[in-house]
Length: 154
Image 1: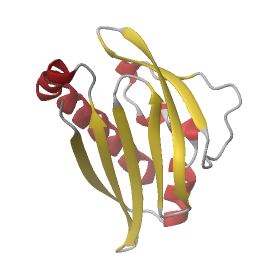
Image 2 (image 1 turned 60 degrees about the vertical axis):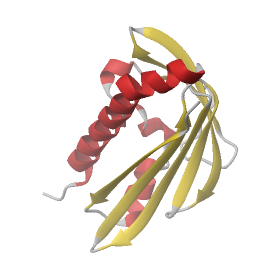
Image 3 (image 1 turned 180 degrees about the vertical axis):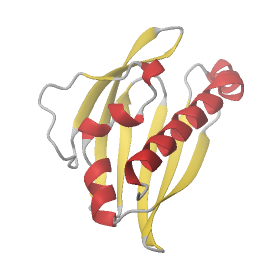
């Protein structure tokens, strides 16, 4: 039924080159994902840097310890500006995630915009209201904490 959007912004006190180097590596995904999701990359031939058309297969356990296969495609990239990943198979009917970087005040403003549609029509809309929206917030809050630990200047 419903299509939803989630938006978050985070200021990262680091040079754009450092931030891009970190976020453009699929190998860093596990580090910025809460451990309770049991995130595991299944792609055997994953490159160090993402590229348009890259497919990333992984599993997560978002609910009741049930493993879900998820396949994401990197559909667009402009180095040090943005990239977009879209679900090809997985838990959502639609998952479109835009990651934007803007240099500001000696650092980087990272803006994420996720457009998603849960499965199961009305039941999915109810699940979004009761659970999904909160879980997405938790995941991005966790990512913000980890990125702050990585990039905060000492």
